[in-house]
Length: 284
Image (cartoon, rainbow, N blue to C red; front, side):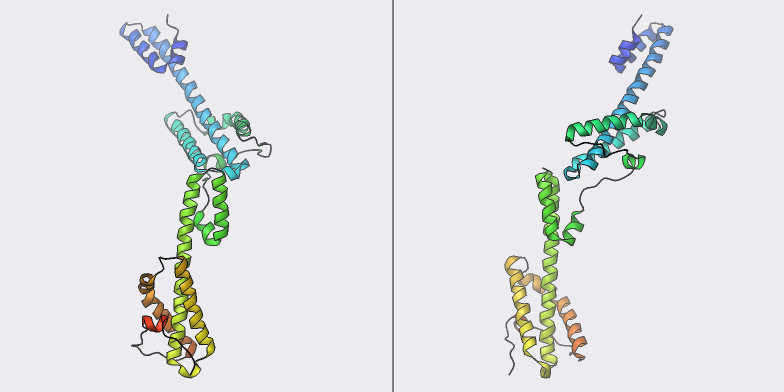
């Protein structure tokens, strides 16, 4: 008689081949025994596979908790992959349901703690448990570079350095790209703000000549200097860029000048490049 246990344990495919041979030979008792043992072996294999994925999943979540400075996209991908594998096993093997997962939970958690401590060298004694939500529902994500860079460019640089030191070069690349984008937007906002400030004072100079002052003249000079400085360090903020934002900036400047002076400017009022950037404004 065939040793179905050895055959099924060694290769499920080979077991099916041997069962087919027995069936073709009319040895139905052998077929029944082979099928019974194969089903049992496959069930044990599926349970081992699910338990292995559960340990793998818990292992990475424990690492995420005890070693936050090493968090990486690789860990996130592993967590997602392990969850997907477990979900797949549960879908195609109804016996591998939530009750089964709960029945192996404690042993899997214990093994995950040991694996995490061995890999990181960090004691896991503070990780007393993992909840179902932590293991299967919480989304583990990397830094929100947009929020970090928008809140503080300096803090963003600090965090990028941490990612670099941790060898997470993908995170470094993303952080740098977003930081550059945030800085570029901030520079554009700054030059637009200075352009509006500059235009508003020139409009006031024109529509309220009796109120002209050294303060207005100084503001015009200062705004020009600020724009020049922005252009020096950011070549993209050139004349072409200023011309692109000219109309909107002028519209805003006109509103501000009219609000501040209480005087309505002429509908056909315009400002030339020369008036904004070249003419010298001095008191008579």
